Image 1 (cartoon, rainbow, N blue to C red):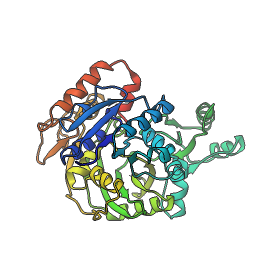
Image 2: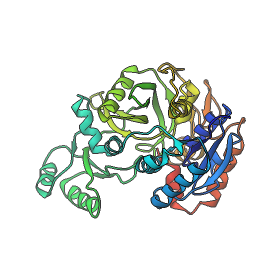
Image 3: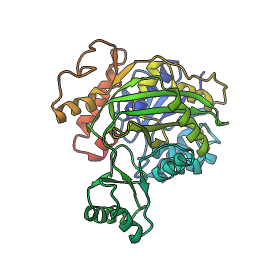
Length: 389
């Protein structure tokens, strides 16, 4: 009997990808979420749906639930999929390790990787290019930034996903007002010079318990929703080993273990790639890596059990996945761009395209997604989760 696996955050399409990956290999995999209506929970590869507290709104209850669940399921392998569930697992790692197996970084590497400003500092120490970035220590430093010629600027939360909490400012007056509002009552945000939208590339990595790279994968983001700054809705696998090498160096600098994704944007003003952030968790377009031959969830599962695995750094190039529901469809509605798309919005066009949710082999996952949308149509919190990067 293979060890059971628990995949968290079952609303997200990356969790569906993990459930399909593990379940297809005969692993009893359970999908957990604060609702039973999820794509992953309705997948034919899911052995059972588990109802959990919300990891963001109820972290203490979520931790207690994880500990109780692990105690009830001997040999359980934990695969936390999103930042909050990863954070809870790390915070309670010693107690969880009594009953469950998992592979996650220590608390300090996780804190640094989750902090966008700390990520910039680490990248710069390795000679990597980043946008001009500031963390003003007071009004005097804020005034110095306001007097610079770096506008437009972006005020960013140091902990966020996708485009949430981002504010664009075009002059000194806007900067002062927006920064003080963003800094009120919380962790002071950072300020970055705005980079016009350009090519966006991601390097996904898996490091074992000794910090060795076990898997690497690079993708190009083709379309997004919202169109300029949102998460990707279509992705393509590409060969760019130098980007994977940079991601490996950055994660080694942080002392990373487990899964993470690093994101770059090509600055159209000078054509150079600039590191934007690290996602210290699984990324929502995970299905593309699995389709291309890098099965991160299964490799992660095996490493969590202490197995040795052969590193995977080569994969099929030119594979394409999309998230039609709701991402790519909403992009078409918001931009009015329905025709002339590559790949097309509907149909396969000249090359094979797989959807993150829609599948003839696993049709009930789409039903789970539809039920979740109907049930939570007016719940802004649930919709925000669906659009996490």
